[in-house]
Amino acid sequence: MTPNQLSKEEKLKYIFKAIQKAYPDRRLVFNDGSPEMPVMIIGEAPGKDEEVQGKPFVGRGGRLLNATLEKLGWKRSDFYVTNVVKYRPADELGGNRTPTPEEIEKFRPALEKEIDIVDPKLIVVLGRISMTGLGIEGSMSMNHGRVINKKIGGTDRKILVVYHPAAILRNMNWEPIFREDLAKIRKLV
Ligand code: URA
Image 1: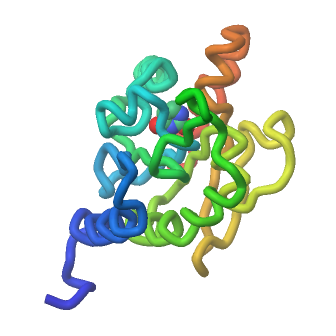
Image 2: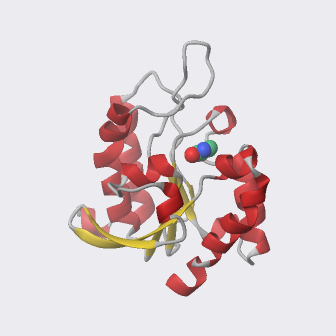
């Protein structure tokens, strides 16, 4: 079977195997949902809950994301969900920390391949780390709710920038903005 005859799922398995080979001692978290879906949601990196369950966005932030998507009439399984960094960046005390620019850079080739395979009609980046991880400049306050066209791995991609759910959990007054920004998905696919 030539690589072109493989399904998206099978191609993604190769990517995951390559990441496992590169990080044999890490508990990796790869993806959730179906790569056949037109919208790819990209977060920052797994946290503790994600590490335990082996799936992206299953903790508090994930529950807020799911609830907001449901309010807008979608199910979480209507999306393909992944992160820029595929392991939990931990600090010396074992807590979560923000991925370093080096970690983001190291995962960039695999993320580009992942995007290439899924070939989504729209990418939704959640938060500053995933936004900058895809090479988008500017602040979240400037870019959120905007659609940015960007070449990724040689292909033009449409990217919607949305606040990270963890930022909303810190300030629930922003929940309507989060919802309004996510609602834009409907007109974009
Ligand atoms: N935050 C993220 O960015 N990704 C997850 O999977 C969980 C929390």
